[in-house]
Amino acid sequence: MRRPKVKLDNLITFMTVAAKHNIEGAADELGLSASGVRKHLENIEDTFGIRLFEGRRGILVLTEDGESFFGDTRKAIDQVLLAEEQLSARLAIKSHHLKIGHSTNLPPQLIAAIRQIRIEDPQLVHVEHRSGLTSTTVRGVIEGTLHAGFGVLPIRSPELLVRTIFEEPLVVCLPQGHRLAVKPAISPQDFDGEPMIAVSREPWPERHREIEDHFSDFGVAPHIVADAYSAPEALTYVEQKVGICLVARTAVLGRPQVTVKPLSTNILMRRCGVFIREDNRSPLLQKLLENSFLRSDHLRLKQGPSSVMATEHSQKVKRIS
Image (cartoon, rainbow, N blue to C red; front, side, top):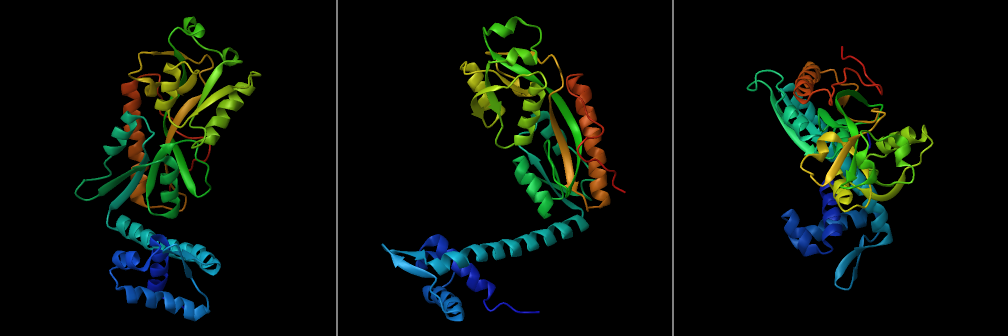
């Protein structure tokens, strides 16, 4: 096997100087002397016969060769760190330490239920929870730094086994006094030409496409006038009479200036699910899936018929054997 010509310590020093733009700042960050930092850079430059940095207005900036080397070095460092994290995760699950991620955009009551999940005796199995965006959690599970994740669906990844554990209908949110507020239910045709706020179109484009496809079945193209990253932002737009929006029912709690009406078709849902790597067959994760269903089923009974727990999800559902 070929050995790298440059040591890992030299690469880390190079990356640090590139971030700090000076020798002294990198030396403080790394706990080295300034001469030690220069020696690491010289080892790389002498090996390849290039200059990595040049002085410009009192700071160090990457040369053209340095820019090229920087991109490849960052990938190499990231890969080393990922290998360490994956090994740590594998060792953690062997020692009954599960790392579980969940999206901060899940319904609050579902997050509470997830954090109450117990696999076995808490003294035997330690569950560590990490919160973030669904996309961050998905990446962590795929890369192996998380053992399982909970997030907003749809999630389409061949590396993951995904199960829906909770779903609730999307409702129409109208500003007070809106002409549609007198109707018992809002039909897709009522949206024709109506100013509409798109919710989470950037983080969840697939879910937005589901909404557009649903309206297109009725010959309606939503008239989007604003984009909101989250449900609270969309509801603020509704209160300001910018337009109307579709969000999950539980997201509208505590909004007295918003009128909530059901969608007559009652098809569009916000779905939440649990996911693990397709190739992970750990008995602990199988127990996690089973307990996720038990917790979400209990949550469904508390919430009533407006929220349902789906036993299987249409995108990719298999049993762990």
